[in-house]
Length: 487
Image: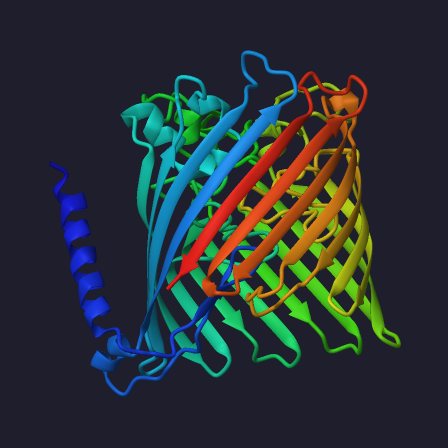
């Protein structure tokens, strides 16, 4: 018997039961935004340690996520997939007592699929509904994890949070669009004490991706020398944007750290009239770093607005290139000017027009003809510009163009009228680097049921049309239907 796990389960069950009994606030509300983040009720103040918990809130969520992935032409490793899943979460947020507060989040997921026709290694968008590593070694299609467990301290408009938490910056996202969010173990400072400025500084020692039950390295890919279990590559950072060349063995051979932290600085400033400045950077010591600078200028006209945006990213190779190479997926891949360097970058531009509840976004991004961009923490370099569902369009020398139309955006996360998002994305990949040329058509619909606003449905459809013979894989449909019930 695993006594440690049993004791932890009993402790958490006891704590949750106590909190549920103590829960008495009638003003508890939480809503779900279109990007998957939750908006919570305002935090209350407590006069005693006891009130810190009795005045806290428990936020419940039941969800169902269903996936249908269909190729127009199937082969041995590309077949039609139908996967369903059910999940639940309970998040406790305490009241503030002497500037201290606490958060505990428990999450669970159960996937349903036929492993005889849909082998685990072939799962696409549905893979995050279970732990592939656990399934390959134990046969389990379920997950239960502590997704959040942290203590916060606030002073003025600055807050320090220590423990496992959601970290929302340009490079790190919870990306809670499946069943369990992407979380990090570390310390984070959020501050608004500087006028017209929001700052976030994060020191993140570990990450726990959405389809993992244990925390893992932020920038290491597993291999057979790390674990004797099946599919050891799924035991560490196996995100779709992870650099596959930064394996445990390769890092050890190069005398590089296998447990290096991720350090992030993120800032937004609005001191200039009609202008928003964004800056973000990350550092993984002895391996890699990156900076992003962005400016958005808004011109308010009669009845509508036009915002122009420009984003620049520079990636600095601090030793990772010699270990894993310039490509995310293959060491020594042809087509790269320097196959052993991760120096690279990206330039993006956009024009966003808003009138009434409509938004039109015309954008371009171009990754420099150097190295692929490495950002495997669910923050996407092309987000807000040319990022569409499931599209990793930041490989070296990839140019992307997107036209997006949005109707019904709501910052409060209550979609009594439908939120509609459609887009057409053109990706011009460098075929000398094994990239493709394709069009991606996307449509998404979100609505809270008028008769039951706690229940929200989400429908997302993506069709990828490969141009010419640029891909050995056929065109495909990626469809997802989700239900969320908040209580």
